[in-house]
Image 1: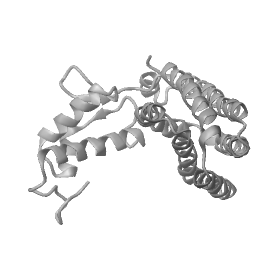
Image 2: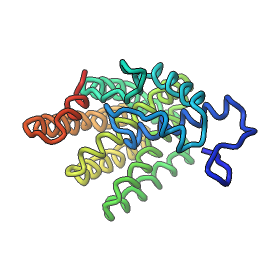
Image 3: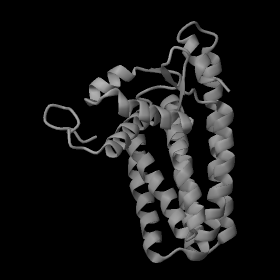
Length: 250
């Protein structure tokens, strides 16, 4: 967010621009778990940290409520909507259909430039896996998937993906945060699938590319089951019980 030397937003910044920046700041905090699922949002503290009035904060909260990231509570405050496991599975179902179709189309339309980008993303991701740099790996994973959508050359498919991307990013950070113990195995599997998909695209095997992508996304179900088991196991302890109950709300 643009700020002046004393840490506050510039006085001449437009209201619309300021509202967008405040919204983006809070959204980033939610997606990257800076504000965790089920946690109350201290709007007074946020306003003070950003050096803005309550007006752009309220605007951001209204927008986040409409988009399903935040909900108002009884005492006129706000909290981050807990992540429901059922919603995670529904998102995986949608991704299988959308990204499987994108892989099929990309095999017929992909050009040399996009193939080069995919290949470089795999090479760089291998280095991240070797060095156990899982957050960096996620960046190359994103490059791979977004390049594939571009290669599909279908603007309506791209629009649908762009609308889902924020949700996908939120669940990706959520899974990464709570599934560190399986990160190496999950990352290795993703890299293997990326390599299979790349070879299928390069050889114009559209059905193979689609099947490999669907299997790649389907692997996320296993990760989600492990995540659900982990959270449920924590229910048997008293530590953080109320927070975990909110996390599993449906």
